[in-house]
Length: 604
Image (cartoon, rainbow, N blue to C red; front, side):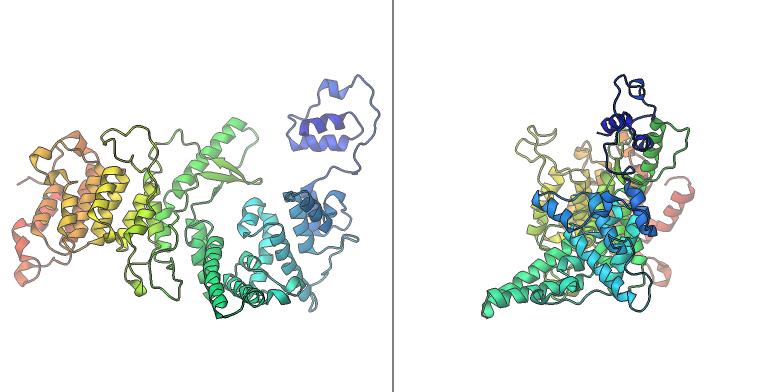
């Protein structure tokens, strides 16, 4: 269509339109074809457009913001209620340009006839007009289908979105009070969606209660009907507010909302949420020099996007610390009787894409030059961060998550016509959801993984991936920390080749699972001073690899052995001659052998 309009306007006396399309850059270099520049057939030089200049949305927006009274543009100045009625009659959604022009016309409150601003000066009487304009803008956003301020922030340029965000902030500071839906008074009435748009979830709940109460009076009678309506309202309120104020499912929006009520002028939590949010495309801004070609420019954008994606892969660790134990139970914040959420926990995504200004076009990250396991462990830590939002077992009267809920959160097995190598035909194919493996580790850290039976643990270890084995081993050890549980100890020892009989020496154990099992030994025997495990861990630190398979990941394995040794003998140090320390370990000469591992020396 762009090329067609360019050719049609080139044959008439519409040089301004031709110049506009050439400046747009879509037609090409802007040089007209010879057949177009000198047409063979003489065409009458007439204007086929009623506009005196090419329509330009950016020019109209700039004139509207600056208050240019002489700038009159028919295509964008005639946005009124008839436009909405037209799109409603044909069951279509108004274009984004019409929505933007309508919102700008309301925000700056200009008379369509004179072009003058209604609120000329900010005097005593003009503040009420500004307040009315802001509230009318919010209602117009709701009618245009805008229910989330992130839509304005992500889909509009920063200079255009900033006045809208400021109007929402003013409404959030001074909102209209909730009222009965049967007594609404023009623009003063705000629905629950309008309160959610400005970030006032407390008033949204109050408005839902008032609407439900008025419906009870009109449609139901008796105490039973009121109780049923109250129960339904509580469920609807939790569902709507949870879905609206946590669109990314990472808990950062909920945390920022709860703290903004207590500290309205402190924006540090909002900044933390912006830095740790990984489910949205990164802002990708790459300056382009004149001599850079299109191919080189795309390569520069991919290089910058690679750096941003690597940084994003490390965000789940910080998000887990920021949202630790912030998820409310299914009974609500005032009645914490169960730690089991009503719905399966949702793990936020790791958006490997960029958002290129000024059009905010999404640019996908090219992973062809990256390792195949680039996102394996970041997905694992992403699941850990999601699971750490759950309350601890026994905190504030909350119970323990049941086995049913954990199995319900397990992802379905991937459909595969043939079983993978090393598995029986009647077994399910392995579950390749690394985030669920991290969730299992988080459940163990919070004390909820003990509800699983050993048969469930066996299914996870045999039918899952390496990350699933790591999550189960560390989770069960953390859940039973300091107890020296024999069943968990046997499970961990089966994944450590040095503790197996010689007949099992050929059994292959993945290096991450072997390292996780050693770390689990330290958690399980934490503070016990167990002699056998102390002697074993001390020997494993300096053991030389006997094969190439054991040499893989040797440094991480030795480091984990050292950490586990410290956990097993936690608070057991001191001088044994003065009565401190563990007397039963004095013959092992721990300090002397550890010092030799550090500085080197002859072996015993």
